[in-house]
Length: 216
Image (cartoon, rainbow, N blue to C red):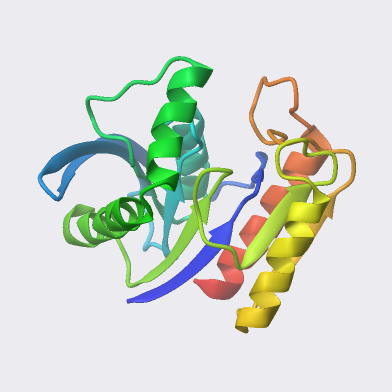
């Protein structure tokens, strides 16, 4: 399986041009290490898939936001899978719960990696239209960096953090690129949030589309 990874430090935008499509979105229940998870799959049933994209959700879990982004990717011709790393029985509703769940996985990287890999394996085995060429895209909680889309006014992961990560990627010999959106804050792609920045969101989505076209 060819797998390319992308980190959207806070990225993606709307307004991609959708080809004529029959977009089907549905829940996808799967198991990893005996635990049940529930993600979301969107695909275009009127076209041969251009490739597959696995979306790793933010710290608040798999929500309507990831579902909407999956639908947008399906409209572009990709098979999109928004995974779940918390578990089907988990429904965090507060910052304290978000922090507890994400912190538990940050503190247990082996389990985190197993759930990511298990989700990818489940997608390959059980999602119609899943392809061999895959991009893994993550928001502030997930993803592995190759392309970084970042806001310069992010109060959570500042420019110094971005620079440090770029240094690590360079030292490790990992091919990478970064695009910075001036004045954009941490959640600049989250529709309706106080951080939402339409111009930055559009720019990030354009960069994401270009990345997909190049790698899938």
